[in-house]
Image (cartoon, rainbow, N blue to C red; front, top):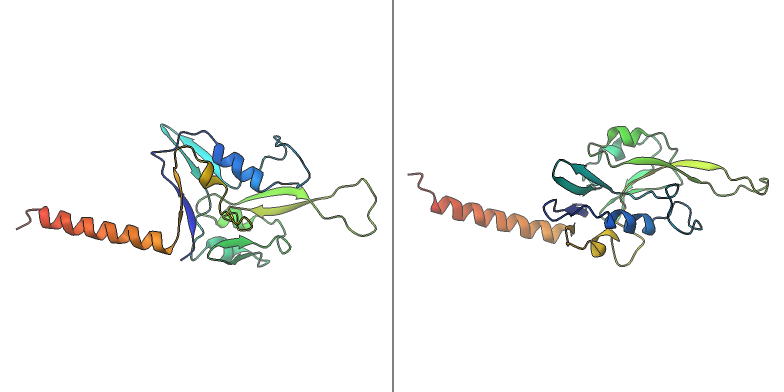
Length: 181
């Protein structure tokens, strides 16, 4: 089972702190300095619908449609999650179409300078982006600790097993308390 971050919509206040933490943890251009509308590219999105606000991010699917759809093999399973290998990504957007949660995006980022290129010319490269669980951060996902209402949680095998055990126990109690016969 892949790990993933889940949000409790009932606790989310729509402050966007998680988006800012994500954008800071994944700068589009590492030397860009402060966040601006041009370089603000969080890998999660706060969705507002009626009276509900909640961050939506990659669910790190165990049988990920984006992995199967990627023609260049740029999306892979690694470290209990789904990761994008940017050196393989061609920016084709097939993963965007395949994702059932709408959490894949393709952004333009500065490409690495090519040998012999004219100084001062910066080429752009399209690349797929999604929540990567902040895999390069030893502290884990940047969004979780900054949430003021503690609405975000990292779900792993142990947490899932515990939740399933509690639900089964509750179901057994409910059956014992019901008067079916």
